Length: 291
Length: 306
Image 1 (cartoon, rainbow over the protein chains, first blue to last red):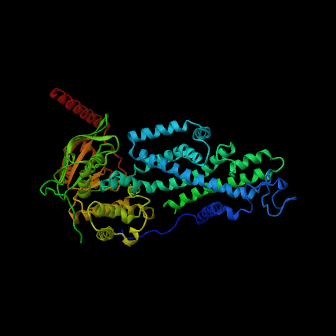
Image 2: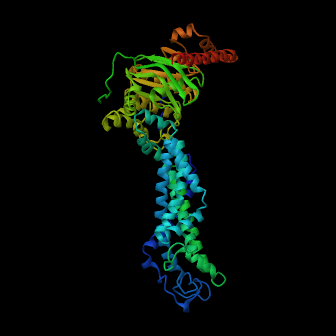
């Protein structure tokens, strides 16, 4: 009975933990780079992203024959610098990712927590609402919403938040349901804690890793949705460079200048990947069982 | 060391008095049928029965943590003379928090995995019972030391997954005794542990009970445990009390055929080759009929009364 000490040993294979950490840091580094680029875009971008020069149209990226110095990633069919447009496009992408995902996260998580914890009619209302919501195909729904709300940054953000809160509500509800049946909730209840105190103090900390992971994932989704809306020209007016808009324009000239399509695609891909990897990494970080 | 904060209570009243307790699934079958039992101050009462007999339900009803959809249909529960049904939900919570504790069945899920041990012991002392956080911290250290945890300060700062199952159960025992409760409901506290640890935990609960004089409602299905820890026993079958007697008397001369069958069913480690003797099916069937008839009778009685 006396051999009781805290076992400080970590049974986790360290190699796996390190690999996970590497992914986390790479993702975080890429996203940090994007944030810096977006914030200081006017200082960093080598050219005006809107300046057209038909003498410099369809210049290939550096390293290919015919490239001009100063145009690192080449130019598009109107002679605009691709790199500068990507940098300015990051502003829109990140703004939408941050605000839309946070709004969806807040609304969905609160509803999911309440539904999962209180059950009964609260759960029934939230769950049916989620069912009805998810019956709409998301892309059509967002196009419809933007058509109704009008184009513009606010509309795009609103549309994403209105559509994607269900992701959070569903997952958070399920997780809360599991956690709120655990014995530690009973113990807190016997200890005299009120329901809201238990929800905030006991259940939420256990659901938080899931919420954080979803939030990062949702930021990636928001970036894609914004790109889709820009692609169909329903997002921001075309005097602002967006990744989706660039992809749409690049598609038209893919046979003459593939880089105009490839550059925004690669950046979009890396960004979404980074967000999802960040979500995974953060979940592992937050979860005491995986620490 | 610290002020002991308790609501006004009747000192001469039994610690726990349950009378005619009926608990049922809402709009469904009865789980407890007119259960009455009393736990006097300092008494250890065992509550035995097979799985599904409703023994844990009694503890849950007393502590106010019945599962969703299961309700106390009628009957009264008094904690130190205070009738719980008469209280508002908030007052009921406060009364339970200051009088009763639970030692839960499964130490693996009874501690919040994302919170450190210390807070999980001291929360109730500080938030419900008005202790200063320094007093609560000292009390938690004292109790952890008392349950033979080496380096209590380190355990206070640890997360549950850093402790073994037996250690977690000891932490939970410390947490249960920390607020100096008058009643502890021990809900099969050794079921989830291996046999050697079971013995230590049982011994520990007995020690602390003897030291503090806390009354205990000890829920178990193990007659061997009953013999070791309790002074009185209530035998439960299908939500109905079969027999209620002092432990020594009940084990020596069981009054009810079901009690006899339960005692006979207890495996004896001294005779490892003996076949197991489960409670005979005929007896179970007959008792079920009787219990069902009792339900019908009471239902008929209320109907004629109405």
